[in-house]
Amino acid sequence: MRRDDQEYPAACHCGAVRFTVRLAQGFAGIRRCSCSYCRMRGAVAVSAGLKDIRFQQGQDNLTLYRFNTGTAKHYFCKTCGIYTHHQRRSDPQQFGVNVACLDGISPFDVPEVPVMDGVAHPSDKGGPARVAGILRFQPPDRG
Image (cartoon, rainbow, N blue to C red; front, side, top):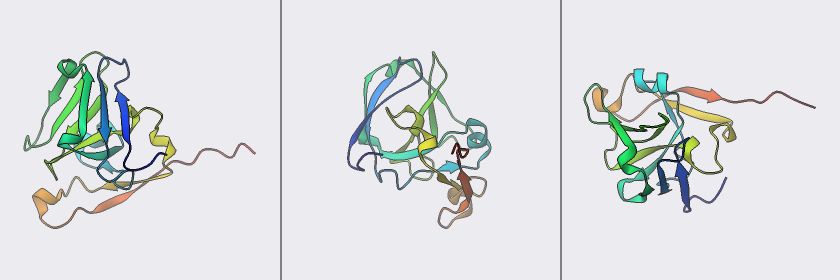
């Protein structure tokens, strides 16, 4: 993967939505979530400050989904349906960005991804965020 302070070009699957993003913690903050919505969505995310995402095209082609408390704002391309980013509930000053939207990056590039406990969300339970488990990707040995 690339340097943590680098700006990444990104896009949805069909290319209607294009943006650049500078990651807040690089790939050190990579994660999934175990809440009811994220379990179904299945994306791997990294964080960016609200000011660190810039749209080149297609911002008007995004649609918004909110659930539960309505704090988190989940954005999707209206054309291809791909989740691009969301304004985080646990830190509304940040976006979570779909790693798969970053040019040249795949969630399968990361062998272990922490899964955060979104069922017992820190905003509901108080206290720090907790890791619920680790998601592992291990390609078959082709040797």
